[in-house]
Length: 219
Image (cartoon, rainbow, N blue to C red; front, side, top):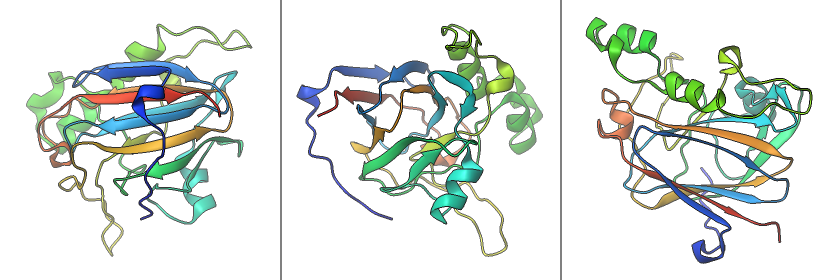
């Protein structure tokens, strides 16, 4: 865990958006810009995808990121790598210290398996991701984003410890109101967020809340 605060001020940001609880967001972050996600009320899981903005076939890879840094948790200094080994973003500031990339995003199927068959019709992150990517423009190759492109993601502020036996557990969040994670874009990156609607997971205290995103121009 590497807790480092940022020197950037919200008043200087070129974009400042609040994502309502359970809603989604999609936006391109240009190379050199700084991108911040703020956990406004604490313990909110912010599920996030990353794509090369010019080639959607090259997207975030949890496997390559974990192997390169030798750590299953993400924090300051982590480079978010694609399956082709390209760095999309580097985490440069982090006041929470725990971000999961193993647990994946919730879906109707996982809600039924994990919680109850009756949870099938609850809203899930995969639906939000799909809604966001289907409205986005094609990449330079003319390729549009589709359901098959929903792969590895990062669950910012989500607490998913791994037991000594290698099992994943979903625990109470360790984030608090105002905690944030900040990233430097190493290349033009398409960011897709599902501000998790999950009502059954202790990671967001069974209470989905808004998240804030900000972008600063390159210095």
